[in-house]
Image 1: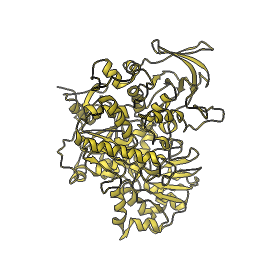
Image 2: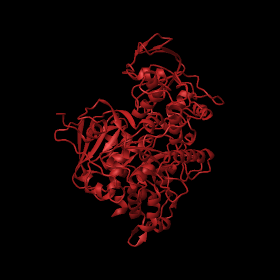
Image 3: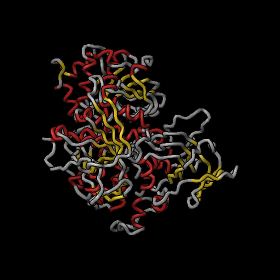
Image 4: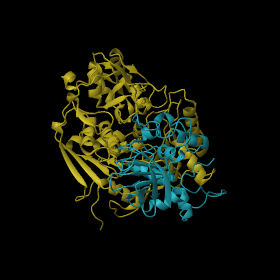
Length: 435
Length: 197
């Protein structure tokens, strides 16, 4: 009999073909999905061909998913060349899961696209060449970011050597107040444990408050695990998970649960009722403050978008604040995927489409879904910070230069707080406007 | 094996956007010309203090520094392999830090571009940029040449031979874990061996 295991340990044990694993074990695990995009895909393909030979085939065509999303709507020649490299490779390998630019299949931000297209299945292992691959942990999947060389290895062999991480468990009890969003929860945690507080560790999110969150809100939690240095995030599978995946995948999956007696490195408990709107100040995601403490911070810009804060739920939440109001600073909106982009016309509040609400509020809206200015990108990227802007953003990182110019200052917050701050032009607790 | 040269001193949480800003991620590390260009942009995103010299002098493609000495959580942020590649392509040989972000550490080992050495004590105050040092990877020490002070490092363990071989693939071939690619002459060897065509 093997010892009681956590969810992360159970997924890795299963993928390694073992009865049991323990934190610290180095195990070869079988990949269920390998995802890459336009920024890291070309380098991964280059290493794959160099190491396995020019005629080599990927280990399993069905399991390689290619989602161009970073530098799409730019005049940069190399960015277009990079998408071409993905296109040629998918063609010669006969890969069915290329979500190609300029076609009806184009999706946008890979982490949201993976979920929308049903590649995030409970109990499975997902490797991706992007640090926010951890987003899929919301679906009870072991999902983690890797570099090009590791990805090329997976591409050729379907396997990767993984060290089993111990699990830190974060339990939110009680009901979440209606002015609090998942972003506030994760900024609270990162402020507590620091940007390296979960290095080499798994982070589990649990408790009635978490299990009451929608799938998209759970994705926001798991998404920012990497901002604490975590290897993966994980949430139990329930009817919310199954309902989201119904109609998106026909592949059978087997979720995992913590064994009774499973051991956690730490278990931290939070009373959800006591949470307040939270902000990460420049230049680190753990530089925490409460929104109500930062009313003196004058802004020049607001940004809503990315894998963290550009889902349809995020735009619905922003629209709740912006409806019938006008923004006081330049406010840029970028949907994460084309489904979200279409949703801006379809979703309504009191009969008004979100797109109309945002236009009437004076927002600048791109309907082209991509990573856009979350990570700066080429100079002509929509919403990119090109000078000493002070920006409040629903994105995930605020290290110097993250959204473009080094002179820029980025405050991270929830869609409610970003929208409320856009209206007043200073950092604003959304309770001021949500009443 | 020892590495001798000058150090470049940095603080905590040097993230991948500072190591290689996202605007240069259109460069593909396996294309030789772009590999070299990545090197020229190494640490271009650093929020430098007025007295801090540039890591790569303007108008050049390489760094005069052999080793970075840094604080906690070096390489945090993105999984972009461009980060260790840019530092390696610039000619850097090792980073000595109190701790590393997990994916950056792994990418150093997988690419063989850099030795990521951990130090149990904080060394950012013990060195100044341009100090001469000797890094001994067998004795696990970093020596300040002028003062003679010897600082102990944590052993690299199993990661050391992988980097010395030139990365994950080269090591796997050297040790018989995988075969050479069909019809080709085997892989590159040595740290910073860089890209192939």
